[in-house]
Length: 301
Image (cartoon, rainbow, N blue to C red; front, side):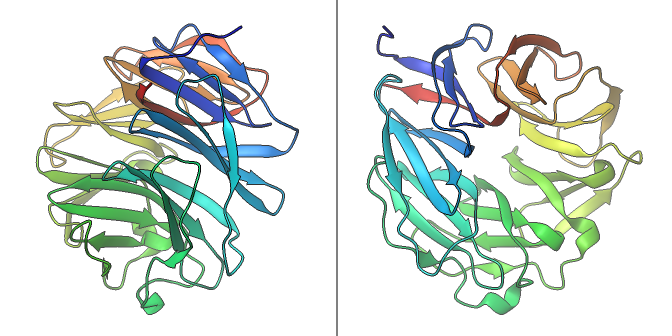
């Protein structure tokens, strides 16, 4: 029988409701699954609790735990019907889920514990600032603001947690679509297709745009406490400021990656977990029966 978990943990969540924890990314325990077809694409920690969220058929649902052993499942009561759950982030010790819907404004639902969720609220009252079919994919926080990125080059900024007003980068271009975004050293830095990199201090004005080799898509942009690390297929790019970059050929790079403690953790299909000390050389360390769709690092208990 699994004992309760405490302290910093990685979580891997994915197909068939997969959830598993590890303190070192090498040994995974407290592995549970649900029925076939449950796809958990988001996982986050806050307030000593962990949430893994996604969908099952037409349902959007979340699983929450405070000890890694006992899980509670809740369903999002959303109106109108939301087609995608693509982002879960944390803000002021609460979970925030962004629900995307084709042809309408995305919405948010919030929860303090991952068990009880608020009613859906429109994310953007003025939906004209974005393409109607653009979905939001990632968020980053810093400089007293929240920056959200999405399809077709969408980049949105909300000044403070108390504010409900969002500003959008005007006339965003699809070629500037970012896959991931990170904050550090006073700036936001994003990475995208073909090693696209851009930086911004306020989330609205983006400069120092540069692209790299064809096919070197930067699937992860991470700030490690000192520098930005963009992990792509074939190369890892590093920079202190998002302006000057060093390209380093990598080996066996994952298609999704995070950093927790002093280790990088990534995944490759189907269900392979890899670790790296430098985001350049990656070592396969574990194999799940199900594919991993989300990774996160935080404290539980």
